[in-house]
Length: 456
Image 1 (cartoon, helix red, strand yellow):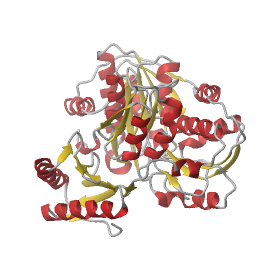
Image 2: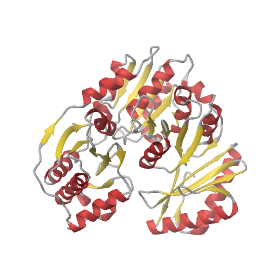
Image 3: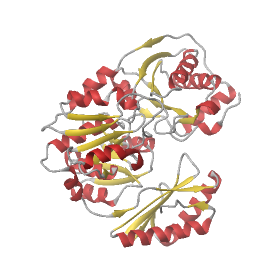
Image 4: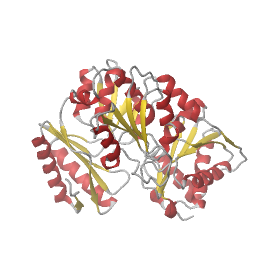
């Protein structure tokens, strides 16, 4: 069978629907995953999907393939990705699949897998590709049942959260999958809620569902700037990531959000994991509160794996994936994180903007994405700049290279999904930040054919 091998990414399977996901290929993908889990003794798979126009057809073809291997299927319908994860605990199912394009353009879609309450990624995903290439599939008879877990998920979160004062909130679900759960949860929490873009529309007519990009938050920021609300919440396409906006309309970066949640969650001696893109603000707060800061690789699968390895109950990354294992399940759930943060905020009679202002102050660039002509060139440049800085500076090289300078740091890492180098720079003054940024970018330019964004 002919298929595009590049849809098999590090964390998931992702591609352009019309080009990469033929009915035959998706059927074979279902056969490969069904075969994989059957061979390790798993007898059923729970599957759900996001609101995209292509999702139901992809889900149906995947189900048909998986059933043919003799593995039973529980179809959970349209759900946020974290609700899919929740089914592993609520239904005691050992394998889950979420059909989702997450925050990618509407012509794309993909598949996220979980097995035995762990992320399924890396070599395991590549093994599915190998099975399809040689058509190494089990055969058998199986049953398909439909199940509604959404009401259980909503009830579970509402029971875990207590709001201590009347909160005025704006919520932007981006016409995406959060629409099926988030408004109902916050209404039951008895907050004063203004919803925008809370009706499902798979074409995403108002903005792309990606709160990590400020251009997608124009309306919610405008509403908050009027000064009548305590905070704003925005979700990505499958609701596993969260964006928080303060009462003045300023984006609260995910590392700042984590820092603000620490006093409620961190106990002395706790390990706290965060990715290489996070600010020193977060590290400072972890140390101040008696925790152990642990910098790790970017990627929700890597973070979840590290959490299990070191018994960590709180972790996050700059993309907005935040993981709470303290009275929760340890997976990335934008809706629960949003609700938990509003609970924490409701305990304090202080504006969110003032809380952010109290955090240790550093000057950081946003994430800078530098295009390369190919993946091969991306990796070559990444290797060369890593080697240069490791020979001349104190560096952390678990994911690209994070260079320590006397007054700040710089990061260069290869994207796991695109021919792009990802950079971020931070200094203890704006002058030092720009000095670090300009020095590293100058070195990058000397190493190859790259495209520096105009706004940098």
